[in-house]
Image 1 (spheres, one colour):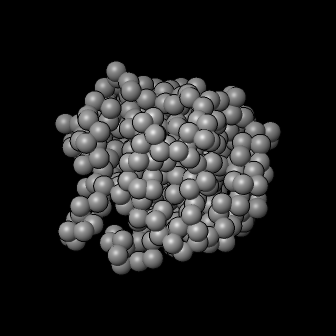
Image 2 (tube, rainbow, N blue to C red; image 1 turned 180 degrees about the horizontal axis):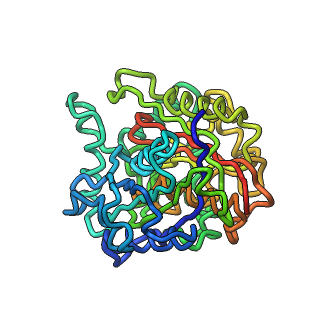
Image 3 (cartoon, helix red, strand yellow; image 1 turned 60 degrees about the vertical axis):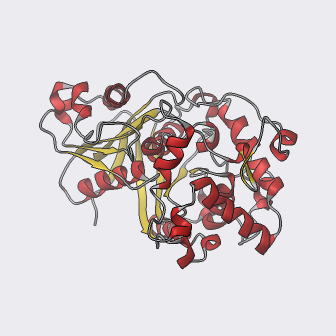
Amino acid sequence: MPIQTYITGTGHSRFGKLSATLEELITDVTREALADAGLQGSDIDAVYLGHFNSGLVPDGFASSLAMQADAGLRFAPATRCENACASGAAAFHGALNLIRAGGARNVLVIGAEKMTHRTTADVTRALAGAGYQNDPTEAGLSFPQAFALLAQGYAGRYGDPTETLARIAVKNHANALNNPLAQMHKPLDLAVALTVSDRNPLIAPPLKLSDCSLITDGAAAVVLSSADAAASASRRVHVAAASHVSDLLPMAARDVLAFEGPRRAIEAAYAQAGISVQDLDFAEVHDCFTIAELLIYEAMGLAAPGQGGSVIAEGTVLADGALPVNLSGGLKAKGHPVGATGVSMLALAARQLTGGAGAMQLEAPEWALAFNMGGAAVANYATLLHADRA
């Protein structure tokens, strides 16, 4: 039986356009997470860093930068994980597997990205490198264009999702107002989200600016601890399940609307934990574009294929609904510093489960899903967290 594992500390920078360097982002959240866990650098057995980069910064070898935060971290094995927009979850799952295998007691997991110093065109090109390069058609797609194809396909198969996508954007902007760490603190009116305008231009039809996540700087960290190391932790959250499913990279080789990789990953996590979607109290999911959040509703089992719009129309996924989704504001409004995103989901979910979510706090939540995705449903990481000790 795998060694039981707990989140015992978290760190999280503000997300947005920041003056801090990549190194400063990494060291700041490292210090915060260690302090929160009540640990010193010398207590950490390994470091995992999620960092996409893809030419965004010159730091191509960033795995050891956390050591600048605490002299006790020196000589701990440090590894950088890169799996497109799921780099943060890849780092977390790597650390989790090390503890479960008996190779460590405490592992520091960091996700970080520095993006806003580059032009939108530069960032778009860097991210596009995570698409399939061996087909001229797909290699020429930006990620907004790739997810626009999903929105077009959804409209053709199930009916126009425009209003649903707008409602998702409005919801996530509203949620971000309660998250002091979020990049975007501006409410979004439904009429604005529905309308193409100078303020809300088309980016890749039918996706408008309001359907797209943000270019962001930021970092997040968690300390993962084995059961014996976490025995005296003042607060801890149990990692009840973790599943990683990867699918074919070429979009043309699969039914992209089926979101089969996300569905399989989430279902495997449910099975590991012995729960179902009805047991979840909230979820943080990968809304890189509003169409992605819609498809994740269906992959989670909240609605049948083509029926995901019902859960936002009926209020299920709103902040005061039965299963709030993206209380943090999601990638759409919290921000999307690529390598940090998966770790941010887990850090904020852990705070929610220990009563430390501030204005975002739910009443006594017990179960959380964090779903981080790389590419168009290619690398899929589902993690289930369970409240243990607040």
